Structures are given as structure tokens and as C-alpha cells.
Amino acid sequence: MFLSFIKKEFLHIFRDPRTMLITLGMPVVQIILFGFAITTEVKNVRVAVFDPSRDISTQRIIHQLHASEYFDVAQMIHNAGEINNVFSEGSADLIVAFSDRFDENLMHTGKASIQLIADATDPNQATLLAGYASNIIAGYQQELLREHRIPFLIEPEVQMLYNPQMKSAYNFVPGVMGLILTLICAMMTSIAIVREKETGTMEVLLVSPVRPVFIILAKVAPYFTLSVVNIVSILLLSVFVLGVPVSGSMFWLAVVCLVFIIVALSLGILISSVATTQVTAMLVSGMLLMMPVMLLSGMIFPIENMPAILQWISHIIPARWFISAVRKVMIEGLEVSYVVRELAILAGMAVFLIAVSVKKFKVRLE
Image (cartoon, rainbow, N blue to C red):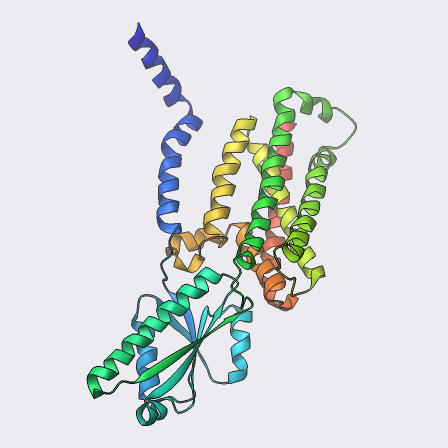
């Protein structure tokens, strides 16, 4: 009899796809995400090089940077005035700038300088990049010592842009904004709508003279308002408590936040059209929203360090584009022309999700 009860429980589990997904699918997804996304290693970092000397020493150092598994020399800067545009355009993560007559100074005086310029909006990543590059430069210095038997000294000068104080708050404030908006807008909206289905009150609402689209808008309006209040609270705390300034336009920062709120609300409506219970809505939100936002959006771990397939998956995560836009506007103080791409992608996602979620909602409830 006892074995029969055990058999019955196994059959219940095997016949329920959601239970099977949670018990067997979730561990596989988590170990893959955590195994590949959570890494502090530096890989395939894009490097821009300013080399006015173009001599044998600078070429050897550039070759060693490119030959390492850590760096990829993606751009050569021909004018010192272009250095400030590299980070603004997002074309490189580290700039290596050689001094004039680098090899000549090195051979005649035994000293030469290299400037390493990093984007310190993520202070941990910037420190790692500067450290890895300094180690490669030190390796070349040891090569010269073995070749010439002379103690050469190459001095890397590290410069951290946008966050010279190296405050970690500069990095996590944009990420926390994306995470909180995802929680409130997507998860809470989906649960609120599914709750109406479970209790049977949604049918009562549908027979009222109000059109279904206005019922949806009524459900999401409180969460839209709460999200705006949370954005204001986060910005006030960031500026006056954490000391993170809003370096760019407050208007465009607000526009970015409002567009992302609409995207997150649309995701919540879409989840509610698929889920039939509040538990299902929470699980779907947790698996499809929370983990990707934390691991694949660049909130904590650099996207460039992840495998190519995870980098491609990160393109469909709205929080990735939101966090990137907030960092550019709020931390780096860039103009709106530098976040047009992020705004266009978020706006496109909003239009697509609204169209799909409203259509699915009508189909399931008519």
C-alpha cells in the first residue's frame, strides 16, 4: 500500500509539465547560467590604442596585448582628440595610450610611460582591466631585461574615467533601477491580473461596459505610478545619500525610465495571458525575468566575458539596454545621441510586447 502511494506521487509529478520543468529543468538552466555568466575573469576585452610613436617597442606591446586571451585590439586611435569619443561610442573598454618617442626614451633613459584609461562606471571591472594590462606590460619589461641586461622601467599610469573615486554605487544604481522596475512592473502586474482570473472576478469585469483594453490599463496604472515613485526615490537616494550624481540630462533619463517601465508592464501583461495561477506567474517571472536580469544584463557581470551564445541571448533582455542607457546618461553624462540605439530598441520592444500581450489577453478571455 505504501509503495502504491509513492507510485501515485511519482505519476502526479510526471504528468505535470510545470512540476517537471521546475524540478528537472530549472537546475540545468541555473547551473549553465551561473557556471558561464558568473565569472570575474577578463576575456575578449576591446582595446583601443593610441600610438604616436609607432616604433618597435610599442608594436611588440600591442602584439602581446592582442595575442593574449584577455584583450582584443579593436581600434587604433590616430588623434588624441578621439580618445574621449571611444567610451562615448562604446567601441572599446580600455584605452592604451603610449607616450611620444616611446622606444627612444626607453633605450636612452631606461624609462617610458604608458597611460591606461578605463571606464570606471564598473569599478571592479576597470580595476581588473588595468591590472591585466599592467601585467602584460610588466612581462614585456622582463623580456627587455633578459635581452639587454639593463633594468628598464615602463610606468603604467592608470586613469579612471567617470568614477575617479571608484565608488561601487556608480555601478549598481543603474542595475538596481532595472531590477526594481522589473519586479514591480512585470512580476506584480502579472500576479495582479492572474489573481482576478483565479478568483473569477475577471469575468465580471469583462461583462461590464468597459472595453478589455481599458481594464488592462486600469490594472497596470497603479504599478506605473508606483514605478515612477520608486525611480524618484532611487535617484534622490543616489544623489543625496550615495553621492552618485546625475551627470547628464534629467529629462532624457526620465524618458529612458518611462520607456522601460512601459516595456516591463507589457511583459507583465504577456505573462498574465499565459499563466493561469499566481504561482505559475511567479515562477515564469522568476525564471524568465529575474535570473536573466541579474546575470545577463550587465548588472553584475560584464557581458563581454560571457560565451557568445549568452551574449546573443542578452540582446533580447530589455534590462540590458536600459542599464546601458542609464549609465551613459546618468553616470557618463552623454547626450541623447549616444543612447538613440538603446531607446530605439526599448521602444521597439514596447510596441511589440503591447501588440502581442493585448491580442493574447483578448483571445484568452473572450
